[in-house]
Length: 91
Image (cartoon, rainbow, N blue to C red; front, side, top):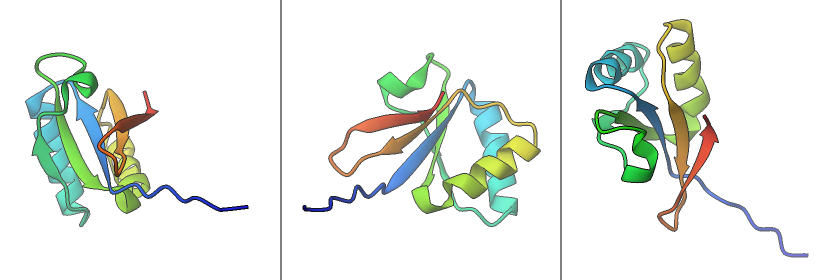
């Protein structure tokens, strides 16, 4: 049997507004978690004002812990697959 592994390169945490995403980015940076701010793809957007934080998938659990502890409200979390598709991992 051939074992196939799926590697997740990046994850995107989606927020309803630019302001919320900027505040979350600051919290992650203070915790030593690198991330970049940007507009998510249309299917991830959940509204025209939505913004997302892109980060290495290996740091996703830690990032979500920091955001949850800080009371940040994100709308969804996606893994970006190597073939360019995305998969929602948390609504």
